[in-house]
Image (cartoon, rainbow, N blue to C red; front, side, top):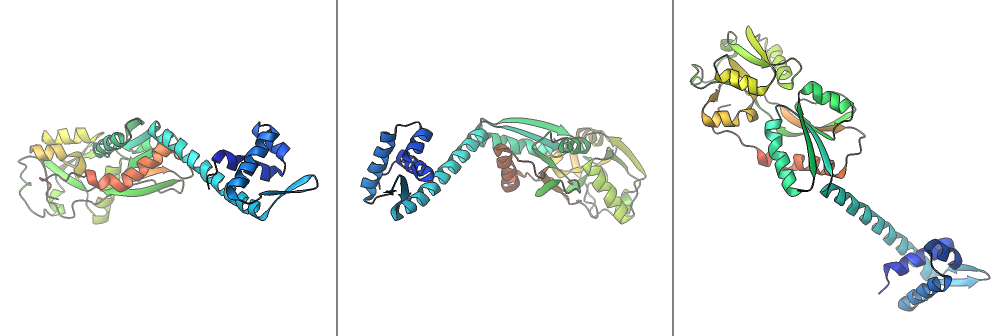
Length: 306
């Protein structure tokens, strides 16, 4: 049937109001124009759609069936319009992402790939520590958070997207780099460069030590992974970091990982957002991209002995 969308709209309006006059007023058309559209539809269909009963018009059996289809078509068109508007929003949207400093080494590659797919999206990226991440979640200041251990709270949704092994790093040429299955007890007298209290890596290390009754006798606290890497390379001590933060240093031979008992410590990274928050289309697309594509961007260093 060569019925136009315009004719369907006119028919649906007449059927809903059960009046040509009211339909004409609603559509800002003249009554003869409305009547002409209905007559054209009836000619195309080959059946009457309305019948006159006194001063009232009623739908015929064919009219009732067409009314059902016209409403379904109108609903589908409205849904299509909404989806298209959301897609416009995604193509030109603004994505607000906050990542833990450890995740940033990996998140940059993810964001670059996502922006290649959606080049008109504007991205605001904030790199901060765990305390800052939680504060932004509480204040609803970010769309998506990429982090290690998520908060144990019911007001957030956290989905794991990638493994994040923690390894012990040492300066190249350290006496322990050639040793296999180093007993944990042998490391007890080593100096370790540690992240600040409250960081995800520090929490994981403290839990690891508590579970095994292992206590570091000497440690230095540093506020970033970069500081730890530089300190280890300079010979200040050993470090415990995500394998993903030392790719370049391992490949360049400036650092090495130790083959220690019970290492690597296996953790995961999570994509997190507030429960109940209506994520913008672009944020939903990024969350789905992270969950489905993250593993493709993993680069396990060839020098990793873990």
